[in-house]
Image 1 (cartoon, rainbow, N blue to C red):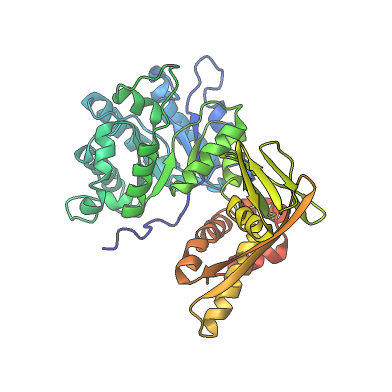
Image 2: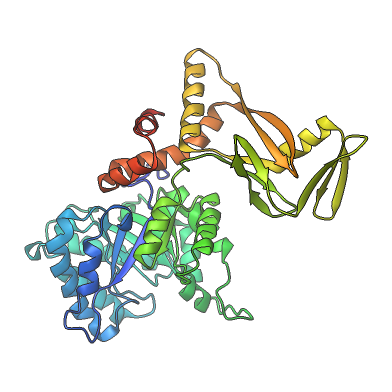
Length: 435
């Protein structure tokens, strides 16, 4: 069995949005569920998680399970994303696991009209891989109880312990064995808060450690086992810039999805992984990456960490505390090394179409030029560089295109939003390239 091939229809998940299933003290305890169930377009997540665990008080969880049934049976048919309720579970508590089974059996009863619209369940607080198999067995019991196809309910787990992190390393060897149905696994989701508690980690400020290793390990395990990696919540909901930086760092690890706590974060996380509408240039200004401003076709640096002046011998380039005396060719070479281009969706499609045409003509590799005029302190410097494209480069650049195609195919409710961002021509070409 080829495990590293995606086993589910969705190849990517950008957004994992949790909603309390029952709000205490309200006349309608399900009002937040009802509101979330009617989201659409960029406000609607790829995966909606009615949260009957941490987001819902323990004394409200029986009512929360019933609210899931009522709301999903009413709105689930028209919901544009996938629906994966989070159910109680704990690796050290048989009582909690028994409660999980009771709630799953209640929610999955076909006569109640909700399970037809539910894609799977999210299991929190898992331990080692044997604990995952216990949860998997509950799924199998529920499917057999109601005559559902075995494996039809996806299982996602939240990595909130060292044992669970180590368990991810065994997934590739265990999935596909006749003794389990772990092929039903869909997402591996980081839960950094409880993970920090389990690791007994301490920081001077009390803030969470970055846990780069956990996010890398989750992404690696997902890749090896054909699953999807999702980062945990970013709880400073007003820090949009920090949220974006976290997503950029995650994507460099192959972790394209992130937990969203508000509809505003959903919008940001839905849009962030998509290729930009316009290409842009950046420059490394002494360890700090700065965006260049486009003016009349040139790309202008407006900061104070880089300066440039002409001298009798050529140019004096200052980057931070470092001064470089350069002739014209050396200056161009230095700026080529300092500058980098972020391609737009149109740029990526252009390059891929050019390579496809070259491959059709029998060429295995071609050089593609990237050129720009950079302006520093009023001095214009034209730079250019060639990048060799071969099949490996083409496949690497296919990742953002594959994400875009997956979004377009699975989220027709976002077609109008995408048409507002990109031209119809770019949309059509992006959907055709690579096929």
